[in-house]
Image (cartoon, rainbow, N blue to C red; front, side, top):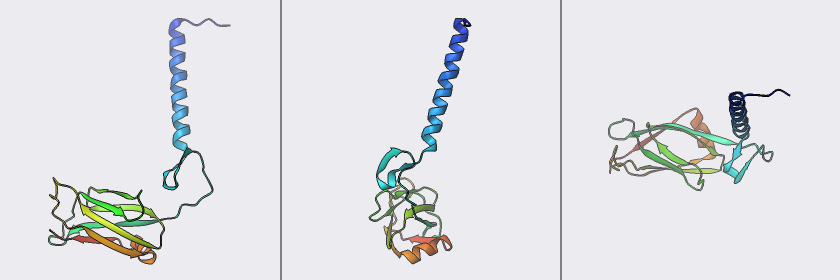
Length: 143
């Protein structure tokens, strides 16, 4: 058996520790998580093909035609699909449903001062599927 010096042992421990962390990180990130269906575990999960629909478009001021930043979006009855549109342009997916109610609200007190009225858009499944070819233009009115 080969005797290692203290310095060599410390180096080997650091290498093994690094390899262990790298292997764990790779294992965790390579397994999908399914929060949309309530599964909190890692792993391949059930054989479900998650069908989603793309929503994309721009939020503009009806008065000026300029992009509006700091608008929150929410899809009614789909609690996991919400967020803030920081650039005035949006791109997000939602599970396929028969109808969609998209709600856009000005929540950015600093940027817009909450001066835009809430905008609600209701789409059928067919109208929502057409959005991938014809992005939405959401024109929000001033209060």
